[in-house]
Length: 207
Ligand SMILES: C[S@@+](CC[C@H](N)C(=O)[O-])C[C@H]1O[C@@H](n2cnc3c(N)ncnc32)[C@H](O)[C@@H]1O
Image (cartoon, rainbow, N blue to C red; front, side, top):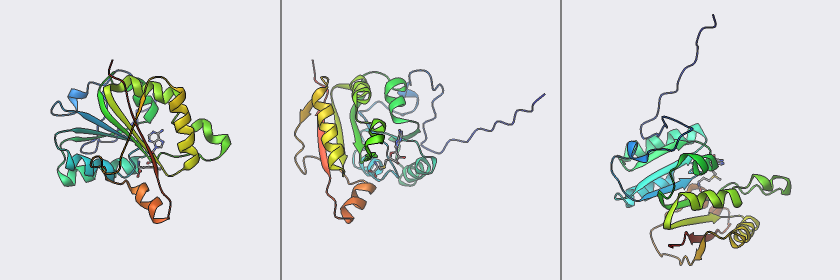
């Protein structure tokens, strides 16, 4: 008989480990109270999520990231700051939006400085395309918002074109200082290198 040597990694504090990766997530099991939900997709080291969660204690924040080291860092940051409104999910972004999250559960979804995949042969790996936009509309509440920033002008152009060709979201203005919006680690890094970021805000129409 082959011995069972499988070991399970213990969850970090504030980590959301789904009971079933193939079913729809029951968010009420993981957030202690019902509140507006914001998602930080590809949260990196989590500076944005942690500052937002501290600023808006009346909202819930779900940070999604595939790299374990980053997930751990965000979890420990949330623990250190005593943020009861933060959960961190280690999973692939598109899978989470397409399959794991319930329909119409998200008030705001943030996609900040995603990998731009600059080479033409890698463009198909870019997140910002139709399957992503469809899954975004699936999870956003009517009137829910999508906020996106990139340092990469060509990726921004690509994203605007995909958004324009897509029917399910309407574009909104995003004036500077419209609301509290901390800079991410990557934004600070790009700005230190003299790059500027472009941004886009849109929402799912209220029918
Ligand atoms: C360029 S970094 C930006 C991090 C953060 N948003 C910021 O602005 O500082 C992109 C992040 O997305 C994560 N990521 C990339 N593709 C992903 C995917 N398919 N699913 C989950 N996370 C992903 C990467 O591991 C990385 O931490």
